Length: 141
Image (tube, one colour):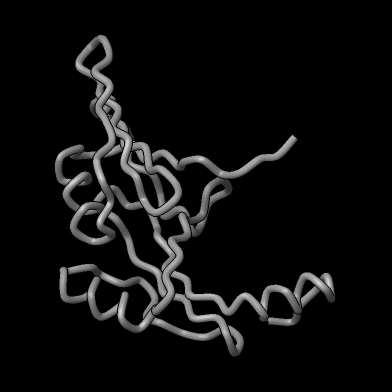
């Protein structure tokens, strides 16, 4: 049996604003909407080979910074050119929490926040760096 990550879900403060954010920033494509009883809506966006599920379930409590609590920390979005992605996202108004950096040669990362507070990691990884790490089974990054 094989498994692959199909989607991640974000509960939205403002569904339309969130859809526009992911379409504008990452060229996400709206796949479909599910209208549920009670005025609840779920939207599926195609993001590369994966999906992002955005939920409008009405008012909710504000979460703390996900980087300081147990549970999901961030959602990683892969790119082939982090510097170009960074410039493009910055020009579109993205507010970065962490500017681009390299924890090790062959890996470039940056972090930003979506309109709902979800932390997004933009990552460019040299496959050889990961192959070497998996061969060793441990790294000292």
